[in-house]
Image (tube, rainbow, N blue to C red; front, side, top):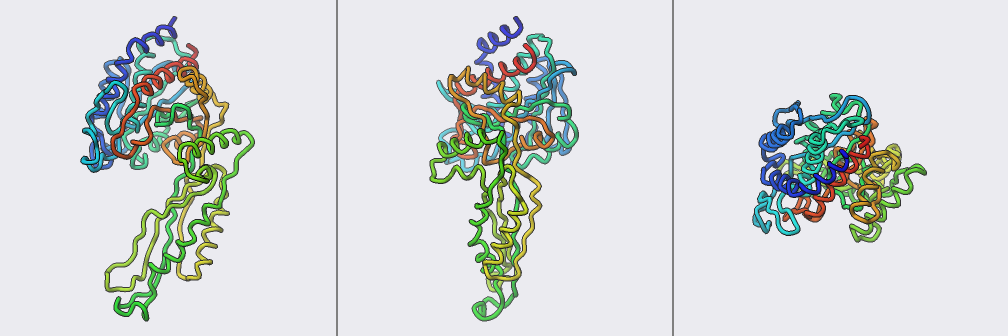
Length: 416
């Protein structure tokens, strides 16, 4: 009866979930330009109202985390993770509405953070509240990790929680980050910085064609060959081949660019920043380029190093070096993990469509849990076109269904 009560109550109180999402959106929690205090206090107040014990922890008081637990110390333990910080709204004139309006229309919820990822946060908070209210004897526990430092790298959020042992003993983790309703993210590429450095010889700018050695021009010749790094591929086990095929299909369908499916299993290299020179009238003696390198699962970093050195050598210039430590590798969760199968089963039941476990071309906080050996997935409501852009929104149907999928999956995993 407990499971039936939880499901029926979730359906009866779906407007509570929609309002919770709207209330979160109305709290401006930009990172790095704002404060997280108000939104974190809101989460704590919500948990208090639900009778859920919680605590605030932090290594940096500007980026507090909220922890909570429902259930027993024995049995299956699952972490629900979500971040409450959002990227800045940017140019307000480019928005069709106040980015922090939280307006609920007949089909949408409007505002910054609706998809990334306050709708997901609302879903996991609502699910946890219903489990607590039900009084169910869970065969395990649900642990909540709400963080406020994801959009600037997670150093003071999920990474710190994992480093400090707050995730120890978990058997699974659900990160309610935005995905499509038909995709469960079970792996991602690793994000790393490659810094190329070029050294030249200064001279007066008026003699630039004759004297000195221009470090900017030298590095430009090296960067002409950056595309060769895209030829380095990842390596996938037989058990990973189905998810890889799913991922390539999804990328080609979503991104609609010829050959774009290769973004999944090949290295990508984006020259994001170039710094060089000190004065207009001087031949620059130093230049550096920062390159965003994404590593697929199973990549051979020694092969990548060899390609970088070959790229420099083939440019024909001297005095160029590089640094990179490749600390963030591609990471994944097995398709047969309990959390993957529970979400897949219930998402397919709710949506009536095939839901594919797949790898993502970007990265997120999920990697910190996977690095501890915790099977981790991402699944959350979203309209991807507004994420990190203008006029962000989320479908009410997505929010409602995601909340129910979380509830059903938790019931399955915790023996209800």
